[in-house]
Length: 280
Image (cartoon, rainbow, N blue to C red; front, side, top):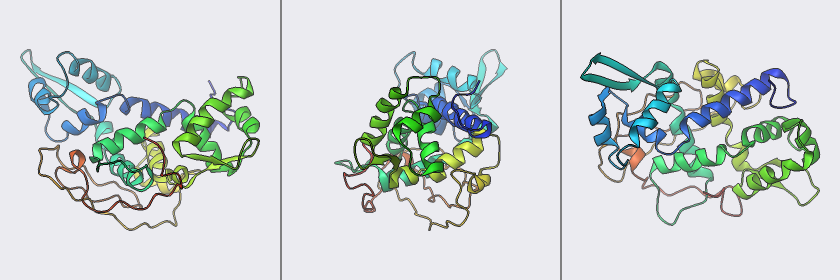
């Protein structure tokens, strides 16, 4: 069933990206996926890697990730069961460095440097706001749209005034901008900067190679060739095996052991949003 008044291909793309975000955004899911990088682990081995989870929290999280097709449970014998990534789970991991790159450039600056994993979790929270993917999709493809027109596209079966709560939230988050009440809405620099993330997520969700993201009809930008931004770890901490490199023309940063759970020592770039960047 159509969720927007957009063409079927765009409508399906939004639905797939929304579903993909819903798989990984719940609390601790990304950390569990990263902890499983490398050889399959027994439950007790995985629990030791995510020791902040209380008793009874890990099992339902693992089951949900297995149901989502990102983790597989292998029963070798009745007493020997391991958990590891599926091929789909492995293919998703290169999206994570892209999210960190976007967060470092566009999210408001925290009082203390944040670990990369926290940057990922903060970013995912913004992207999973209700109707966020559809609104961002429409504004990217149509540049400027009035609230009423946006409502007819994003939520055609609802009262058009229902568009304003999610729109106001996206404005508060710094992903959407407007010149004032009654004026059209458009993507902010931070919202537009989500192109590599949403394009790659869209390719992954459609089962395509990640290098197809540059050809995405809405989020693609084959001419862009950003310089790679290496990440350095300021502390030596245990961390999952390094992520596989993303197969996209837009090179993500090079990851070093421990990066995801430690913060960068390099200076943060200037905020793209005058108010200090999207809120966390």
